[in-house]
Length: 217
Image 1 (cartoon, rainbow, N blue to C red):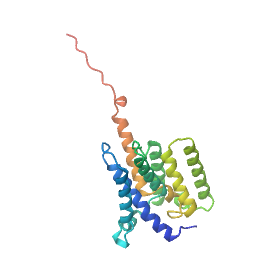
Image 2 (cartoon, rainbow, N blue to C red):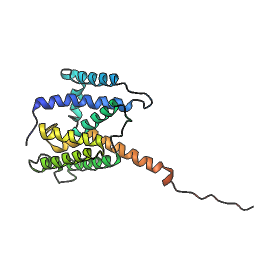
Image 3 (cartoon, helix red, strand yellow):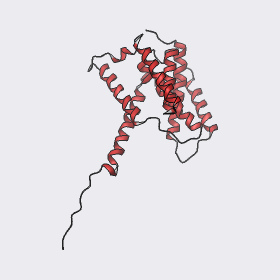
Image 4 (cartoon, one colour):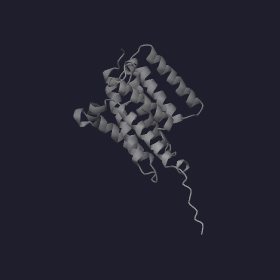
């Protein structure tokens, strides 16, 4: 089991939580109001300073007590959101229905396995010295191929960053699953998936057509 260095893990936790919270603020920002670059830079810098406060003065200290570290994929998606806002382009949806479905199913399987309802040992597979690095390499190649073809550039960037952190520094925990998924990302995927199906069900195209009765005089 190859675990990350504590110093790298500590630094990652502080910076990654700053990126996640800054992206959350941007996500809640009204779409009708522009986001100046100076405001974005100040927001991210302020979040990093706040998270790097010593000990219990840092919000990251208290967040880590509940959910430890954000996954590399969550950090990558939030960083991609910050970059798209910096470029002034339209706010791209980071959690697509396809990605949400994959993350929701993977997270559900992991939690069922952790509760003993499944006995496959999915989480411990992420520590495998052969299978986990090989899977990470495959995912990194897929991300590079998608980026080269110009498909899902933000998501390719996020996945590539997650695999780079995992492959190079074993972050965040040395387990491949923790590089791809965390409780917040799983909840985000579930909410995005529920919203997607709610909009489909509310769409006029799927509503049953009730024929009108005709009355003859």
